[in-house]
Length: 84
Image (cartoon, rainbow, N blue to C red; front, side, top):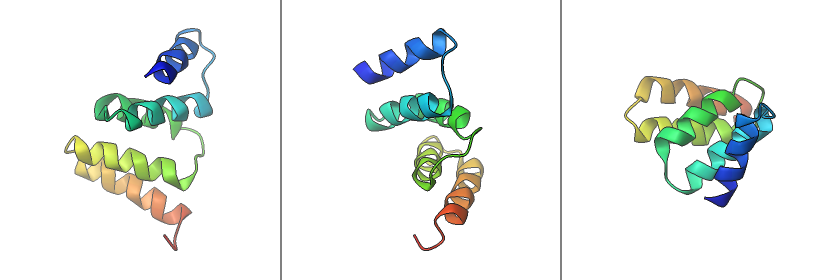
């Protein structure tokens, strides 16, 4: 929770990048806030991310019933981690 607040401060100051967006999304993912996590994962994946980020984004989209978009993110995950 504290981490999310600190990362939000960076976004408000315009000092955020793909890393900060990912960290913020992960903070919300870990506190089971699917809508906020999805919002920030969407920003994070505007820059290249690791496979796990796409997987987590897909899970948060599925939790909100956004299955088509979740499938797109799972395809990105699968292309980055074909043996997973």
